[in-house]
Length: 150
Image (cartoon, rainbow, N blue to C red; front, side, top):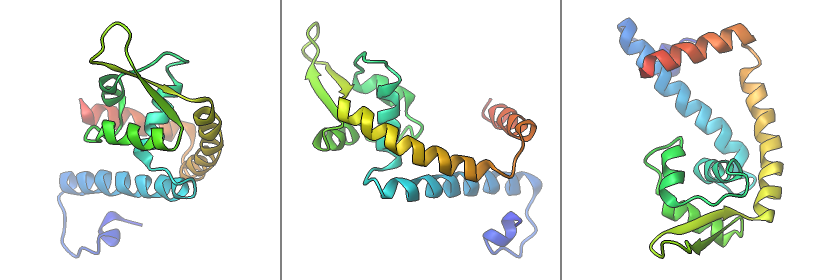
């Protein structure tokens, strides 16, 4: 379906405007698709992102700025996200031994188990979302999106 139909517009949009609206609309649609799956696990997309970042550290702690730099949504309140994950016992936080002003954040064993369960469901959803594209189209789309950001 064309973007004009999704946004119910009768206007003739410039090619540039149509592309920008299409990218924004599609980004929100993708976020909604993933958030729908995550809702069953009582976790937000941003909390899921924090868990993935921490798992990628392979047992090494991260501080809040490390996490913030790697977040997909750069405007996320990392402190609040980490606190919610601590309350769910999915991550732990302790003071850095060499710098008492810094905190070190680690994913817990239960956080790793939880993330594995969630990842399986999310990956199935991601595969379903991209099933209409072949590998060449996916590579082309990635290249175009990278070019757009440069």
